[in-house]
Amino acid sequence: MKKIFHLETCKTCQKILKELEPFDGIELREIKSKGITLEELEEMRALTDSYESLFSRRAMLFRQRGLNNQQLSEDDFKGLILEHYTFLKRPLVVVDDQIFIGNAKKQVEGAKVALHA
Image (spheres, rainbow, N blue to C red):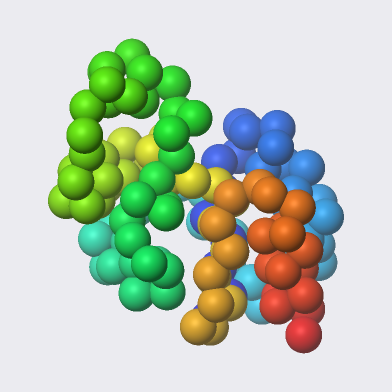
């Protein structure tokens, strides 16, 4: 399975998607229009150490809701990601049993290698 979860309107995602091309055999999942399913989130979680690692603290709603002043649990992170697409750190690339989360250079380079191996 090769999937890229991204936000179409995000300039950073757009830039990274151009770097990751071509997309032969890769499913592009735009998260604003479809959201994240529980099954997808649990598959992602199985490939990483926590729901927190999948969570974006840069989301505007994070500060607007005062979540930055709260101690959040794993269940909180999971629920927030399922509630609103903006809480998923992106882009998020899943290649079989590997996951690459966010826009750090190391993550993007790893995703590029894995996608085109």
